[in-house]
Image (cartoon, rainbow, N blue to C red):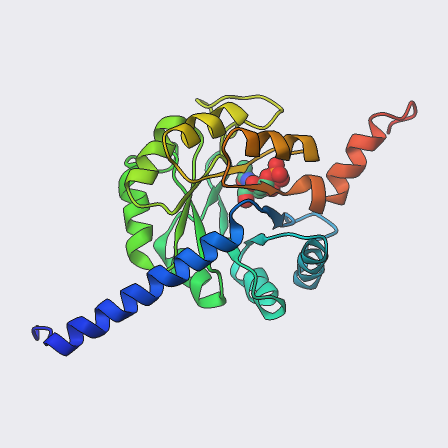
Length: 245
Ligand SMILES: CC(=O)N[C@H](C=O)[C@@H](O)[C@H](O)[C@H](O)COP(=O)(O)O
């Protein structure tokens, strides 16, 4: 293998500096904001890419600071309509639940499609070594990595391994985490108090929930179904009607 010349090395340093500046800019754009997750699973009447793009456009009109988008095709379509930060992920069905971007090949494909940040599953349920999973994703792309975790321990290990953001996304979805219908604000608070940049995510239903997450120290808050899933929204209202179907 050829040794790097000094000029190669300074070019690489310049690339690394540019990536750092870009990551700082992305994080500043998200800080203190609402991130709207625009996703629809197969079987949903909302499941087609142009519909996801319209959901994203609506979220932006409503004041979303960033978007969370599943799959290469949807990321590409949403990228065409906005420059606000996109957190990309690629869900794959595992033995028990959807896994979030389980391979580095998917991480690279999402960045190629236009994702600014990539979310990966950083749970013990998926990776024997959570820190190694995060390090591998961090090394795969110049983009910041969001570690989707379910417990404090997974969050701390992901943060130490180089995740730019830790999401409480998977609390309630691994069998060993807190299983409750409400958002895991305790996990948000515990991670924030340890200096972790926390994206509060999972089961946020109301603006009051969002405010509580910021009070607990969240860096930003992700809301999905309560904004972008009309089937789930209808179910909540229908359940209050005496003739609920
Ligand atoms: C567990 C899992 O696979 N969560 C996924 C992650 O991207 C999405 O299905 C959620 O909609 C998203 O996390 C936002 O959460 P909520 O829709 O509860 O606001």
